[in-house]
Length: 92
Image: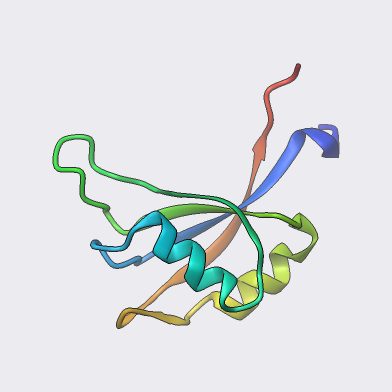
């Protein structure tokens, strides 16, 4: 797989259920990491978050550092777990 077609994203779990995309973005950026996108995974019926979010960084070269830095940090009273996963981009 060509590296140019792979996007590194972070999977956050144990995110507070009342957390909003922008709040999570600001929380990550306050720790020194620029964010390209944030998407909280929401239940389609209730609209609430089941505690998961995808975060894509501006600079994917820092993914391992971010995981080590943010994993186990407290976000509104909950310790978040952070892991990295690769997503294959659609070819153009």
